[in-house]
Image (tube, rainbow, N blue to C red):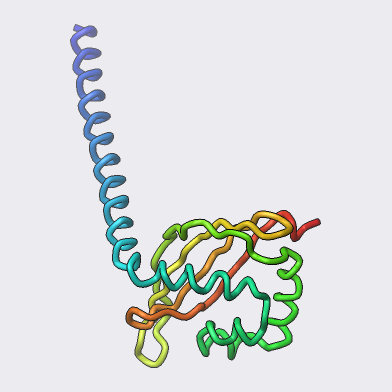
Amino acid sequence: MAYAKKEGFVKKFLVLSGLALVVIVTVAACIFAYSKYEESQYTDSAVPYVKMVVPEISKWDVETIKRHMNAESLEATSEERISGVLQYLSRLGALKEAAEPRFSKVFTGPYVEGVRKTFVAYKIDAIYENGDAVITLNLLDNGGSYQVYKFDIKSAALTE
């Protein structure tokens, strides 16, 4: 009798484990599919912009950066701060090569004057004269045209 109870428990456990596995795989597949859908919404318009703007940013010129950034970012950051950051980043030297941009995510910001802004993030592996770097670009989506909202460059060459 105890053996039958144990056998019934094992069957229930296996069935529930199987169902849990099916649910986990289904959720993971849905998340992957949705991510690919989001990425496809921006591939034709954002990727060419990213490919154009990375070499521009890598000139380390304040006026060039200001031309590509949106007004809100510029208002929140002083020209002295931009200049200081660019001086620091210029230690990387000239851009030698930038890999194909990798879609990272789409996210929305808070409502500003009744409008919710959409941002698209990309990561780009880059090779500069003085080392490799990973660039993260957050773009403000202006209905198919883009502006740089924020960018970040990480490189071991900057810590030396």
